[in-house]
Length: 253
Image (cartoon, rainbow, N blue to C red; front, top):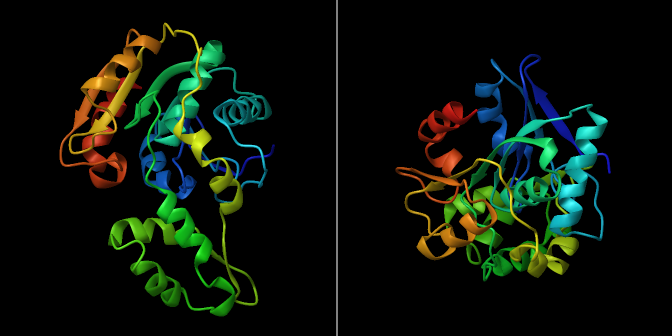
């Protein structure tokens, strides 16, 4: 697997950032640039996302193995990992399965538990969008508006649109694979062991992805876990309050 990536900074320890479901490396470019003064920051498109290759197989074991291979390709023997949502689960599996590869572990607004989901309607709306009937991005926005009424959420989804040289629109992500493997991505691998890493969980104060109930699960896998809450932020902590997110992140790194 040859994952698409961008690198910022040419000195200091390696930092690898992993995006969430339907995201891409572009979501983290601003944060990467801010960290690049002190670190070599790699932002990555995970498989079936962004400009990385499409593949039928998709589970957290597979995704974590992709990142391990990426580190080997880049001659990275140890790195700090920042993972948001789906990317956070990948980073946790990596820390549990390949602890020697992980220095600092920063998990953004996700816990190592099963989630009921909620993205199905978004995925099916994307699958039903009339990409072959229009070359107008606005037309796709109008189509999605009835199915994804939240403006911010819809703009996030529209970042997945790509246009060919002849103007044809398509989704950059592999929708078929994401829909097929969606339930797998809501899970967290059982029997993953226990990590002695100092794991930092950063949540948005208005988000319930990490709560009193599943925080116990965080501590079961990562007994040294620390919880940090960022004010005025929901699930997309780094986008909704960049400075509030960056401040504890820099202290951790």
